Every structure is written in structure tokens, then in C-alpha cells.
Image 1 (cartoon, rainbow, N blue to C red):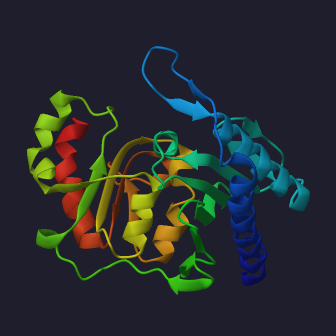
Image 2 (cartoon, rainbow, N blue to C red):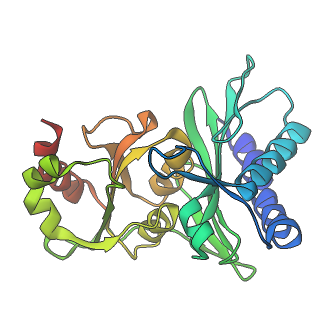
Length: 265
């Protein structure tokens, strides 16, 4: 994409973040209904708010860019011949939303030729949002001000702050193979909120399992623009989603991948 396109789409996302926060406090800051997608075979909650948010986001995108493709967690795909596609996670951290934890967010990415180029992580309860404006600049917007995002590249491996969550996807038989990694774990992972902390330099490594494209695509361009590294556990393109590693520098990234490698066997 050229510079003009980056401005057009990043301005749209910045405006959309404000609309989403207003929409939440006007329409959704009240009682909601929770459903279990797994219907007794586990617990994967979805709320009436998830669906309302996604409908609102789709409507805003269609008004401005009617030919673009849209892929959302709750309502699936709207396919066209456009090279542009929007990936939506209406509420990332639904468990946090249900329990009253304010760290949930709205995640949206703009993909061009199937690659995430812009990402938005909007936190209505925290009244701030994270957005990259091009390949090399990302910001956190809060209280009418913006601050450039930059990972803390100087932290060495011995002193890293590592946040991780397996969400039940990594069995004990695999975990016992990565004892040295488990010893490095210090903090829980609160979904996109923890990735945002890494982009601000507050956390140095984030590791998760079983991400869907709407969980990770919006975060990839933000983290890359802040100077971070994002791959799968197999060191493949994070666009594939699945098991994800995000690090503050390439040296620490390689060392984390090495610690995780036994779990891949």
C-alpha cells in the first residue's frame, strides 16, 4: 500500500475506535446474555455483546468500503474480488468481558493480499486504543494524547518478562518436555492486552496457543511497527495463526523458540 492508502485506512480505524467506545457505553454497558459455543463439551463463551459489536463494525466498514471482504469471528465470511479484507474479533477476551475484567478489546485488521497491514486494538473500558499508521509507526491513544509504541529491545534473555497462556491446548505430556520454558513464565496472558503491553515495552515475550486469525492478525502490524518479532512456534509466518510467539528482539525470540521446540515433537 502507498502512503495515501495508509492515511485513509488508519484514519478510518482511528475514527471507528471512538465510535466503538461510544457504542459500548450507549448500547452495551448493561446486562447481556452468555452462550456456550461448545454446548457442554467445554467452555467457549460468546455474548450478545460480541454479536452486537460485530454487526456494528460490519455496518461501518460496508458504509465506507462496500466492495471489501469481511471475515468475523461471529458471522463468518463475506467474500468478494477485492484485494482488501477486514478481520474482526468483536470482543477479544470474552471471558474477561463476562467476569467484569476491563482488559477485553475490539480487534480489527485490514489485510491487503491476505497480509495484515493495519491493526486496531480498542479497549473501551480502559478508554484507550492501539493503532499502527504504517509499517514503522504505531501509537497508543489515551486521554486525547498519543504515544509512539516501542518494544524494549535492550532487555537480555536472563531478565525478560515472559507472559504465557496455553488455554488448555497444550497437554501435560507436552508441558513436561519444556520445563526450562515453564521456569521462565512469570505472568499470565490477558489476550490482546498483554500483546499491547509488549508493544509498550512493559512485557518482553508473549506465548499463546491456538490463536485464530482474528486473534492475531490485528496485532501483527502493531507489534511489527513497534519493533517486535511475531512468528508461530515453528518460526513460520504468524499470519497462519495457531501457536504464537512474540518477542522484543530477535535474539530472545530464537531462544524462546528453542525452549519450545521439544513440545512440537
